[in-house]
Image (cartoon, rainbow, N blue to C red):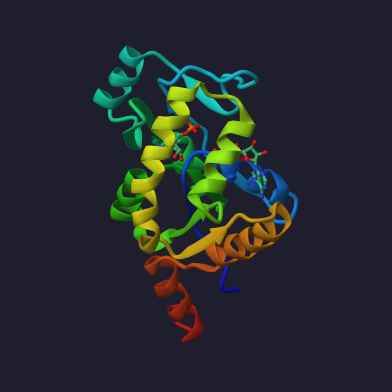
Length: 209
Ligand code: ADP
Ligand code: 5GP
């Protein structure tokens, strides 16, 4: 009854590149029910194995800047020297359908989403146990050149300082445990009601709805 006509909810995941965000979402995907994963647009070149429209929409700097001008992004930021952004339209549609919308965005993006949609947003910061472990995993993933890895490590040292801005922290030590925690966070995100839903629930509870 309380869920009748409920709007969707947003779950923001951030954490250094190589933290295990994709791995955890993949491992938990069967347990978290229906969700919409927001596919970002980026100007960074695809890594080996990445597919346009699956991991990202890969576009040129000019195309990205056109989209900025047209107001097509819910949020965008420059990360590691490339543009990354979340398109507004598919997110709006998924929310209208009452879905849980999952974002994998950086700390700047999280702040922007909070500023615009705080009342339906839950967030989690995902990180390996230590910087040393992050470095090891980035090297083992072997998808990035050494200078790219070095830049990501430098970025991670800054990003970790934003950990306190998030509702939850997930330490990705073993994939199994991190995925279990992620399932709990996703369930909590679904339970978050917007002020609008709350007002409707109270009216209904009082028999005024
Ligand atoms: P992100 O999406 O945050 O950039 P990935 O999911 O690509 O990170 O993970 C980075 C690398 O670390 C991948 O090679 C992945 O297989 C590995 N990895 C992820 N979680 C763990 C873990 N708990 N233990 C060991 N390696 C992991
Ligand atoms: P990667 O190049 O490793 O895929 O991602 C680099 C960083 O960009 C990660 O921290 C990731 O969360 C962030 N990112 C990916 N998409 C977006 C987006 O649409 N907006 C913002 N602000 N950050 C993003």
